[in-house]
Length: 195
Image (cartoon, rainbow, N blue to C red; front, side):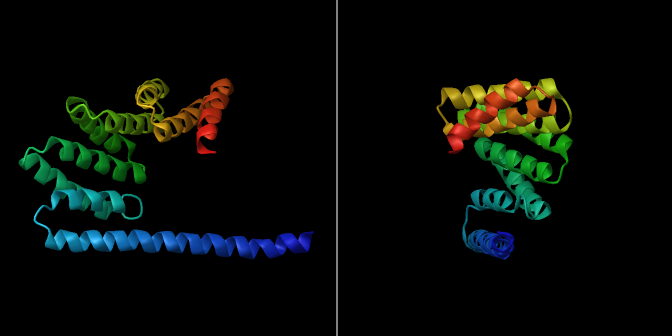
């Protein structure tokens, strides 16, 4: 039995290693395509926003360069929906590096625009991210408020992925506060969706 387990470890490692490399190759291919489009397209704004999003976790500093360029162009041309998208993406880059105060500031700005534009699901996404920021900053009541707002929108829109996402976040929030009844409730809801 021990021999089988010891043989499985290298195989599992190899499968994970290959999976991560394949994911990385596809992500790099997407980034390369976007960079090429940036040099050839007249309308650079959507490409800048996509580059900010693609770089958000593995290179947040580069992501912000693209994000700030997008934000500047969107503001200059008064394209509010893309301004909101740039703000939201910039917030995610700060979240990726643990700067939750800056993430919160950009998300709150994005939220104002998204509500004005009546972008319902994007509003819910931003509300969820605001909940994350408040959770990480230790403000349980505000984290709960924003998570619940996002949850209500996802429920009303029957957005299953959003419900699972925010249910997981609510479970994490309640777990940190040892409210295990709610932890079970929200984790079970998320689990039933992720199955």
